[in-house]
Length: 95
Image (cartoon, rainbow, N blue to C red):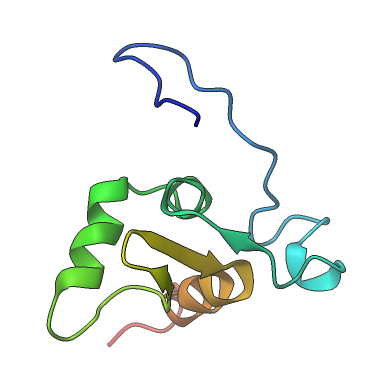
């Protein structure tokens, strides 16, 4: 079992394709790659606690997730991209 890094230790980021990158996951054979909460938080560039909070709310505010079992939550990379696309704001569209 891999232990989490100690406080202040450098975490080596995993190579993930971010939305808008030429190597976007949606165009690859790994379009349905499953990501852990840690990997999803890196992908979205938000704290893990934010994702956990979104899952606990009555009206789920975050991206769709898979509850593999009681303590294992997974996210599809395609669902994370849809979540980002739904929150993309066009600067010319002011209300």
